[in-house]
Image (cartoon, rainbow, N blue to C red):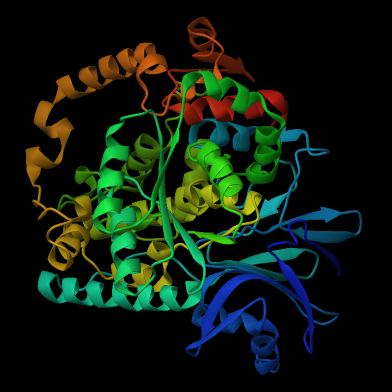
Amino acid sequence: MNIRVEVKNDHLIKSTATNRGNVYFAGYVYYKNSLYDEKNIRDLIQQTENEEFQKILLDLRGEFVLVIHNEDEFLGAVDRKRSIPLYYYKENNGWVVTDKISSQGNDKLTGTAVTEFIITGFTTNDKTLYEGVKQVEAGCYITEGTTSLEMHRYYSFYHAPLPDDIELLSQELESVLLDVFRDLSERTKNKTIVLPLSGGYDSRIIALLLKKFGNDNIIAFTYGKRQNKEAGVSEEIAKTLNIPWEFYEYKKEDWYSWYQSDKWNEYVEFAVNGSNLAHLQDWPAVTQLVQKHSEELVFIPGHSGDFIAGSHLPFEITEDREFSIDEVISFILNKHYKLWDIGTIPENGPDLVEEIKESIQHLPYKSNEEASALFEYWDWKERQAKFIINSLRVYEFYQESWEIPLWDDRIMEFFKKVPVSLRFNKYLYDYTLHRMYPSFFAKPKKLYGRDASLSKKYGKLYGMGKKVYQKKKLWQQYYKDPMEWYGIFPDYKSYLLALRFRIDGLTYKNPYNINSFLVKDFILKNRRVTPK
């Protein structure tokens, strides 16, 4: 089979010749307690010359993309988070495997993927926005089949809980965190660390553990409107830990020029990559920060500790009862399909439910442990691995490196055995952080029943109140948002005119947040759409 490997971001992905043929690699892996990166990956490949590499994948720990290519062997793999994406498509009589998909020359968008992208910010399963172009999913690899490239799964983030002794689990989680940050400290020594320090727990624990292991060359930063609440918390934490802190102000009058700039358009082309929304949130701040600092930087954002710890779980899916597959799908739709409200989809329209079923139907779902595990399985392989992880592209756009310690494979594996009662509302995670650093993290309160669910607490009034709140937010956020990013519109009238649009027979209304407008603008700009 004719296969061509095409690397676009050669600053990130390096090619090297080995006794197994050409190897393309980015990131790092640990194998049998030894660390390999682009400088010595050749040693690992040659050390495993006589082994089927797909059988080794589950033994690799780290963030990576890897392609092995010779006359007799082809393998293309991404890590358990899809932190560095990989795509493939047929071209004439052969196949192209690449790290970048351009919108140029790929203007035929597929219908279901377009709808998914508009209301979630990403495309699900192996689809991309472009007809015939597929992506390698988290925890998967592709090999040469009889007539095409075939994808196989080597890892799944699906829980298998053990008995819930909170003290033992908390002690083990602390031990795992210490191991993760001990390794991180070694990988980042002699580098300038840049920490996006928000008011939340994830970036806070990163700051504390970096300091614990002797990382002193740290810059913390945050951004937004002057005097916003998160910036105040961020500055106070940085001051307490003696970390230099930088603030990048966002003003409404700056956003329009930023959003209309050639640099933003270049970044969108770089980051969307056929399947994921380009993140706006820290792009202006990072743009200014890398201009200010000429040294090589490594960014360490806080995702996705909150998700892994259980923050996305609705209380209703943790209740001790029997669930149906349709209920689990409903939880997924309500949580993640909300950038735009599209109402009822016509029979000949995109089948979003069928796409979710395709993703999850092979796994059990009836008990609360199974239903919650299935809910988080979908979240892991879809939203986290595509939408959240794609925020790393802003650092790569400026040719800077990154680390995501709270996505470490050891943390993922640990939480797979934590019961849902201790994952809900991040109870075990917050309990452990409080036990480790009681002056930085409040002791969590375990929530039950009405206290754990606004819909249970307020009943029918909750749905009505939520609609009123969302409507009020739509009218006011142009002026009140702490990031000021609705300044991407030249004036309030332009903002109001953007609150509804129609494409391919579907009306989209009630935008959820700033990302709603970003997906809309991208699709309308690239809008030659074909049915599924």
